[in-house]
Length: 102
Image (cartoon, rainbow, N blue to C red; front, side, top):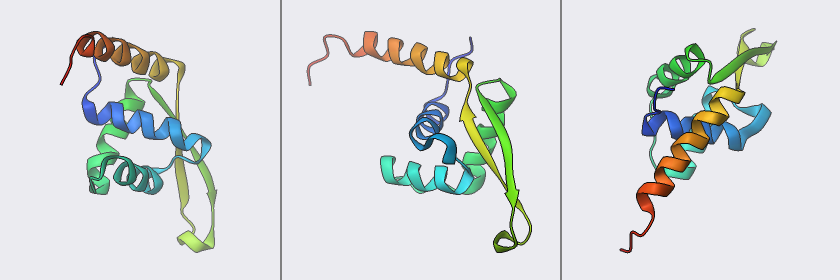
C-alpha cells in the first residue's frame, strides 16, 4: 500500500472524528481546530479526491436544499482500506517514536 502523506493522514483522521457528517467545509474547520492551521479549500479538496481515487474514502451526495442554492453536499467516509492505511501509518510512527525521550 502506498504511504500516506502527513496531510492525507490528518484529513483521514478528521473524517474519522466527524463520522457521517464529514464534508469539505467542516473537514476544513475541524483541521483548523485540531492543527491550528487554516487551509484553503483547494488544499483539502485535492487530497480528498486523491484519497477517494485510491479507495481510502467513499463519497456520497446529500440532499440539495434551497439554503445552498440547490446544491448538494458531498459527504466523505473512510473505507476499510482507509482504516487499514491509518493503522499502517500508526504502527510506523509507534516504531519511530519508541524510545525517544525529549
